[in-house]
Structures are given as structure tokens and as C-alpha cells.
Length: 274
Image (cartoon, rainbow, N blue to C red; front, side, top):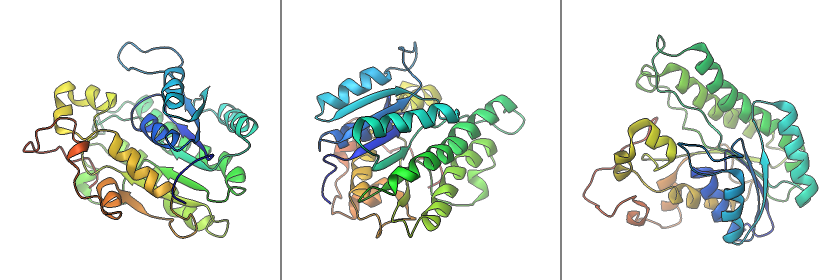
């Protein structure tokens, strides 16, 4: 399969950032994109709503269905999955992109923040996967892609922010287990993670706008995701992919166009876990 024409993608956290970029890349093929996110009204610090995202996706050539979804709420997720199937006739791809982050140490992480990260990152990924799987089984090339890191169990990735690392690795453990559990059903479960920091609103909140100069654009993740999602599901599953490695596998070696700025001499900021 070389494109995603006519395929239906259910993308959590797709009102902005990487989730939206993946949706827009699929839309260029003529895909259907369910924008499943919480933001229905513009936020003072974070640009984008499910409606503005849907408009961008349709402008890119796809069909969009914006739905207000809190991935922590089982009834909301169930209703959203059913609405997607009712609208587009099924679901071919699930992108577990919604995530919460707090780069704080153990003593500095309130349990409310701990719970939020685990409810969104781990429980949300598990819940959305659980509800989508019965419909993915009916697809000709079903994929689940989690935006989570490779399982690199080194203390340096845990010590500074144990709670966040646990929550992100929980998403990757879903890939590890579900890829084998649903192997006979032909559903691919893979993870995708960036080599470098990606210029998103979340990155602005963490490090400020100046950090963007050391980042790559969201398009690198969207292009890498597109490559994964167009591969045969029965032949490519259980992988923990890094964006530039995925691109290299198709012969793409010049990544200059993905830089946020054009200063190729500037050192890029490595992401966590790689």
C-alpha cells in the first residue's frame, strides 16, 4: 500500500502538534481523519481546536470528523469510536498521540499530576486501543501507532522524572504486549519517537520559544508515521521506531528541510529516551 486514500484514522490529541501533522499528511492522500481531542474552544496559551484542525485537514484534501474526546473517560471514547464507524464505515488506523508531561522529580510531582499522566498516557492508550480493536480487526491493513519511546531501561531516563518516564514507557509496553496478542488478527502495533526535540506548543511551554531553533518540525514525524502506516500490517509490527531511521529506510538522508530554522550548523536538541 503506497497511500492512505479512503482509510480512516482515529487520532487522539489531534487538535495541534504532531497529531494534527499526521492527520494532514494522511489527508493529502484523501484519508478520513477523526480529530479526537479535548479542545473545543481556543486556549489562551495553546493554539488550535478540534474544529480548526478539522478545517486544516479538509483543506489538505481529506475528510474530517471533529469530536470532543477525553481519553480518560470510557463512555466518551466508546461513543467517539462508534461515531467514527457510523460516519466513515470503520476504522483502519488508531494513533495514540494524546499525552501529558511533567518533567519533575519524585518529591516535586503532586499525585494529581502523577494521576493525570498515567490516566492520559497509559490508561488512555490502553482504553482507545481496547475500544478500536474490534473494528480494526475488520480492516484490510490495520495499524495502531503509539507516540512513545523505545524501551530503553537506563536509569538516566528515569531518575530526573520517574513519573513521566513510567507513563510514557507504559504506552510502549502496550506496543510490546498487544503486537503479540493481536498478531493472529493482523493488527500492527508500533511505536514512533523523534530523534530530536520537535517544535510544538508543548515544547514552548517546557523550554520557551527559543528552544524551537534547536528543534525539527512536526512534519518529520508525520512523514515517518506515513511510511509506517502504509506498510503491510502483518509484516511490520512490534517495532520501536525513530523518525530519522524510518526515513532512512526509504532512502531519505537529507533532513535539512525538517529543521525549524535554516541554520544547519546549529546543534539540534536530542529528545528523551534515545
